[in-house]
Amino acid sequence: MASLQRLATTTRGKPLAILAVDVAEVDLRVRAFFEKQPVDFTVLLDRDRAVSKSWDVTALPTTFVLDANLAPKLFIEGDLDWSRPDVLAAIEPLYPAADLPREKTTSRE
Image (cartoon, rainbow, N blue to C red; front, side, top):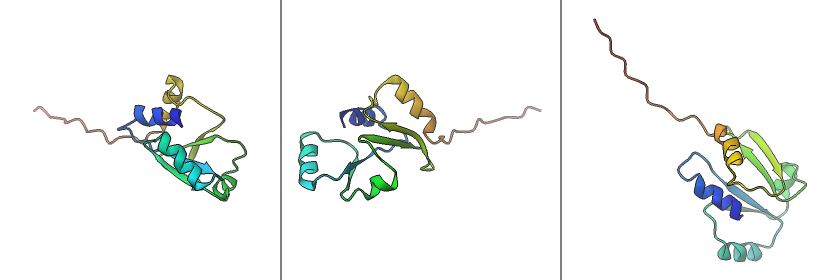
């Protein structure tokens, strides 16, 4: 969670959404954990493991990185330091293209 929080801080202002899913833990335990270690992103509860099963998650932590169309592009099982430069470089191409201002053209006669 600390690594994901660093990613959230590092990428603030960029077109990136972080969503964590807690798998099969008691609500009170999850709440107590995040009261001690707050994060700037949404944490959902997968109480009955339905989400984990539908995404074929077999190990925790497991991370999916989706592109702007919500298509899975990266899949990681295990811990990863999300603030590493190579990791940031790997997710950068997945950001949606920004609408860039068009250059003004002038014609000379």
